[in-house]
Image (cartoon, rainbow, N blue to C red; front, side, top):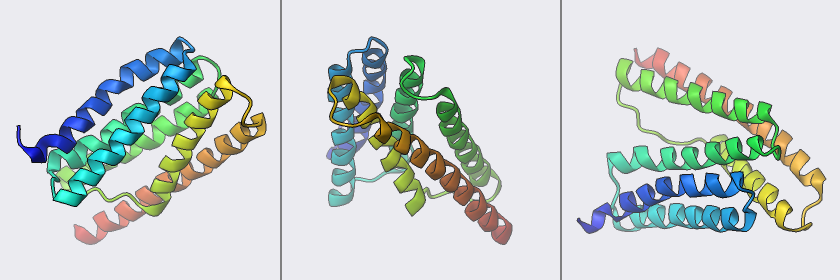
Length: 181
């Protein structure tokens, strides 16, 4: 293994953490879920830092990293919806947005030109809000640091950011496809 493979290895470990995080949430082992979610989050920062700092980037890493993030978030949303801590409609909305983006990216990549993924500002905000919602929902199960109203506010903030970022991707990449072809 080369040093330049380290970010991809860390990303694979993050993907492997998805199952234990889901298990912990489904078993209502919220402290364990929080610790594992935190480890996954730190690993995301570490692999990104290494890739950028040392130029250890790769096409595989550019694909695996966002997939690892999505796998973790969607799995957390599914588990939290299953145990009744998040509304099912929010899970459906998050998954639908991700499927539209992935389908569009695949189509663009194969029909128009090679796609270089570059998340937009609203997409980054959406990811931050989704992560924050997971953290607050889990933390709320451990203690009363956050009033229930914060979960409600974040559910609607995530809803707005999911719709906005999904539309942004469709409009932006639709225009690009029309201008390129």
